[in-house]
Image (tube, rainbow, N blue to C red; front, side, top):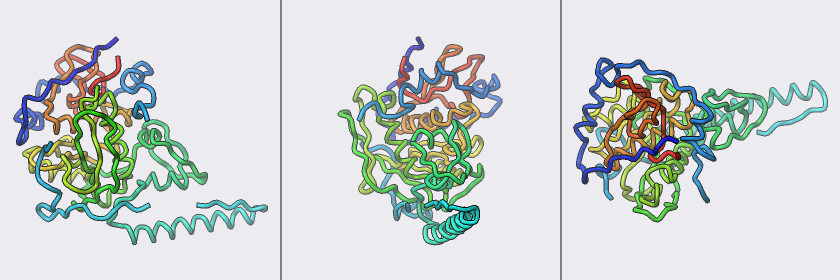
Length: 353
């Protein structure tokens, strides 16, 4: 049985980025922390049981941090708008089937053109793969790319979270954000934190899936809500405690630089502590990392827990024994191995033993 990794509690409130956090972004491949080449992780059944548990991240049952309000900064507009939201025909003859197929293809093309023209600058309620999923997705094996098919398939939350999506590693988006509308009430009894989810316009990713993942992950008993210590509520208006932002690599770098952090070398995410934004790099969200391999669902949970952990005041730490689960505050996107020690990937603050 592997002991739970317990985070070191924060040492009082903070008003800006911690020095050790800044230092971590300055480390290069030659530093000690990278002395042992990393291995791509291949999840085993035992590992999945250890860090995922029943439901693979589903909920087990039915203060002011950071900067100012979400007004535009340096030409970046405040959140506006809301995310946007087939029918097959069976013929009796080959001719009828062919005609129906052509009609369906044309309808999809026309509908896509109309949607792109009308909603080009809005957050889609479905990603490029997600839109196809409601009409046609062939499969969603863990770590697979979404591919179109002629048969309609509805993907579950878990299937969507286990699917990679295409996104350019060098993408620099518009810098304009849409807030995901609606409220997800805090389910727990602990100290309540409110947050807003912003998604950069034009990413082509499923903003509502991202918002759902944030709420499920943070309020899981293995996360920062453990033991009713905290509870998290998503809002779309007012002044939340922080804003979780899904943004292109270029826009992520822009906002992280406001807090003295350079995310460009390893294309990572950050908590921009001098602002209100916890920045999740859309490239990492869509593609994952070498360290997690095909375990993309678990990787996305780790991204959320790690960066929100910084917002709550927690520091970086590493595993101390070979074969031990990495603490959630380890920089797992960058490395699992350090100083001759091999750590196992872990998305949770309190993984189940």
